[in-house]
Amino acid sequence: MARKNEIRVIAGRWRGRKLVFPPVAGLRPTPGLVRETLFNWLRAEVSGARCLDLFAGSGALGFEAASRGAATVVQVESNLRVLKMLMDNRRKLGAEQIETVRGDVKRFLQRTPDRTFNLVFLDPPFGRGLVGACCRLLEAGGWLTPDAKIYVEAESELDCPPVPANWERLRHKRVGEAGCHLYQRQAT
Image (cartoon, rainbow, N blue to C red; front, side, top):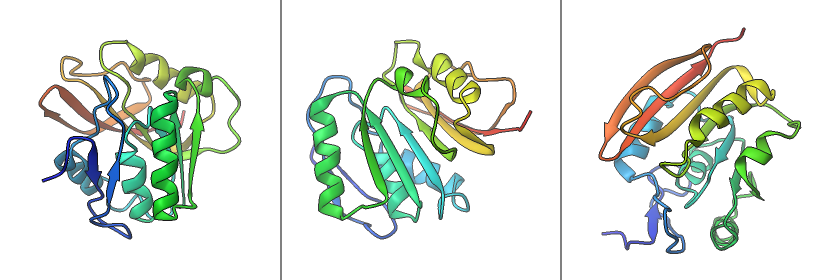
C-alpha cells in the first residue's frame, strides 16, 4: 500500500518506482486507477509525444507519460516546495526528457510557445474556475498541434467543462469528486 505522499509509476521504463511529493494543501495526485484508464485511452498516443503537464503537482501524469515513452514532458508548477520535489524525482529517475518549469500556469500560457504539444494534461486545483481560461489560452496561444489530445481533470460537477468549440470530447468518466475528460482538438 502506497504511503499518503507517494505515488507509484504504473507502466513503462520506471514501472513500480515510487515517487514522493510534499504534503501540500490541495495537492491531489491523479489516482492509480484513473491514470491506468487514461493511459489505456492514450495507448497509441504517448510514445514519442511532446507533453505539457500543467499544474503538475505530484507529477503523476508527466512521469507516467515519460515512463511510457514520451519524447518530452514539460511540467509547470507554481509551488516551490512541490517544484523541488518534482526536480528531485526527475533526478532520481534520470528523466532527461522532463523539463520542470516554475510559474503560474495562466501566465505561462500567455507567453509565445517555443514548440507545440500533441498531448496536454490539465489538472488544476478544484473550485477556482481555471479550466476554461487555461483551455482558451492553450487554443488561442498556439500551444497545440492540429490534432492534439487534451486531458482535463475537473470537479465532477462540471459535467462538460468549458472548452473551445473545436475540441471534441472522446472519453469521459467520473471518479469520486473528479470528472476525467479526454478531448481531441480539431484544426480550424
